[in-house]
Length: 265
Image (tube, rainbow, N blue to C red; front, side, top):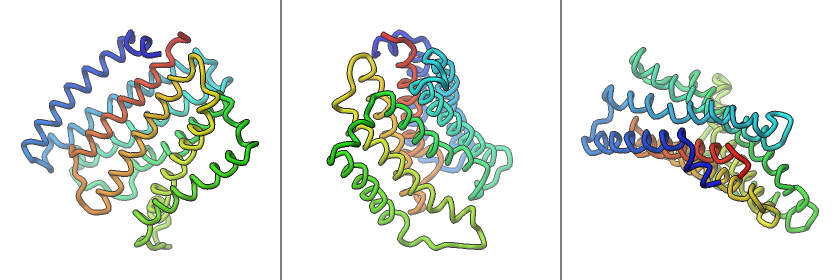
């Protein structure tokens, strides 16, 4: 699998592109600027990693049977998630650069950002079926895990993000997103943890490293979204700050994980 990634021309291009972005980000970070056009432009440019990874993932899914196979279906979901991230980030930049206004909340960008929650969850479930992890649900440990992990993650999300939130019936979409983002992320990472625990004993052969790579990508995405929500709640998030570098890294890891499925070797 790793040879497949290293041999991929797209993978090499994305890695070089990422390194260029990293040094650009470092320049912005050291300069201390936070509200310039350069900050907003960086947010637009790094999203192309998600665009390239998403389109390529859709093409790779065809090699696995597309929607007709669990693996192909999982790749489609992850690819659409990356494209959702690209759409959200591009729309975010449109508000900042073209309209020159603060991004409203909720906005059209949230369609892309929020889409990764159901898409990545469905992607993990599809890969779980491909690994045969479902058979462990018959054990007492399996039943315990599938109950405990979601409860723990929801408790963590509640304590960090939801304690001070209130229901605003005059703005139902915002209320839904306020609760949906942290709870949705908790559900997605819960599914990921459950799948990892169930699949440890059944992963094998050529699929093992590929699926573990996907799981690493999901953990990276979760940590990044977790950090964004936390900083946004404190009012310390800014464009092209550390969180955006984390998103750039997350997009790269997910794109490379999908490239790992480009061959059966």
